[in-house]
Image (cartoon, rainbow, N blue to C red):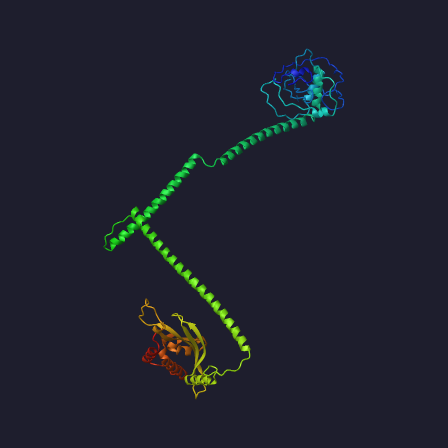
Length: 489
């Protein structure tokens, strides 16, 4: 301990065994008057003689342990019991009976709480915990001079022990400080361990894969590839074995044929040739399509030109017709009223009405083909039933002869005139009427020379439908079809 107060107790070693002082009777000695301040309250301490009779001294004298850690801030005072030894510095003077009585009375007073500290190992060893006198000194003045002499120290010790309320808070504070230091040390240890574990964890996170793990992954990939290859080979061999067994069951001899590199190359070359051939075919088709597109565009341009010419001619005719001209007598024209009577006569005789006619181009030599829109009407003269009509188209077409050589050039004289029958608006007619039309329900083609037969057959069929005579033998139907239809359209 440091000698801050200049006291003779500064060199006192708490581990030095205390010398046992034998109590002796001596004359009463008045306490020395001293104006120095002692450890205690800020008020002046007054010495009050104890009125209690001094206890009988036994052979073992009562000792007290005084430990002074620092004369400036803290003074350690440890009070012992009756059997505690007192560690004092060697002096020639001996304590008086009065002082011994005062010490004995203070020792037998109120018991003090034991402070935590090292336990006594042997009698005469000073034990206990230091007592802080900061609170006591904070209320009073600091001592002017350090105490010297045993009487002053004993007096101060008796005063501090006479007031146990000063030592208890000091012990509690010391205990709390000791516990606080212990908790701080534990906190430091736990913090250091936490930092160490955190560093180890970061190192583990930073290490992705070790060399053995990388080698294991590479080996795993190699074995997986080998396994897949072996599975493919096994599947191929299994399929070949199944084919061999199938051929063996049919009684045919079969030999496993493995595809060599040369055979594979030949097969690949054949496939490439086939692909090249199809590419050439596609190119030819593309060329033909391009030519057709070009021809279509030319025809469209020609159509536009013809339409423009037609519009110009119509405009020119309108202008010419607006001019006043002398009437011209025309004979044998369509506007002749006599022609109208002729047409009316044909219609009444055949019950066939030609509504309109359109000119269309033929597929051969671009010849004109008239397309007539006709209506056949049948009316019973002595019946109140409504007239029955059939709408159809008759188109005169040009067709080549049978077994004609396409390599020869064809002319108009080599073509045959035919007529194509096309029914119209059958969806507007009753279902029963449509079913009874037989082969007149569908389009067909016949030779133009058979127009009278066609008209006769159509008249009979419509008459039978109107009269309800729809049941005919199969021979009659075949005869009618053979007479009229030669080429099915």
